[in-house]
Image 1 (tube, rainbow, N blue to C red):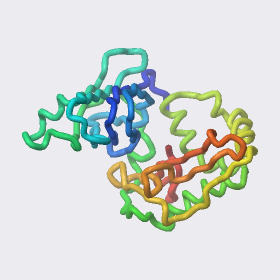
Image 2: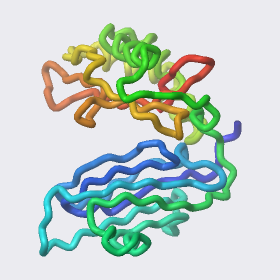
Image 3: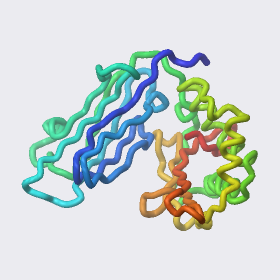
Length: 257
């Protein structure tokens, strides 16, 4: 499939003291608690579908501060443009809720139409699954495969586990030099050869969130952090963290993002 000419980004103003959880088309992509005002941004093309799109938001306060005026803005823009194709702002969107249900914490859904031709992400046509929070044996097997590849330092095994994610990134964002086979093998080979302290795999500490309306599963730990975590033995500030998104590909759960 041809790479789209235009690429899309999200950008936001995340006000101080707000906890925000965002999903686009039921795919989680942003969870953060902000202790100061931030302006995060990221890629959005792989989250969009042609036609109606649904942004789901949960927002709450770290603590109530009566004198503090909180604000939030979320935009989706074409790369290189300052004209948003979608915009959502707080507290304005609260006016759509009944009086008495406009304070934080709040859940909100906003719908918009994306009319541009776009590739289909793997999760769009994946089969609908019943994914319990504790996961299934096949989901744990897929996550263990990623854990084992990192633990072994086997770069070929690691890149094999990640091949569908790499293909998705190329599908939506074009050839990425660092992900070309030779470059990726060199980069991850050097990274995996470093001394890492990888947390043991414990299925009781992993939660799988049913997402993409049952067509995908998002892995995290019980506290909401990364499902897999490693820390460099000589530089504790350097870490590897993974919250993989899984979908069925050819009958098996695969890492797709």
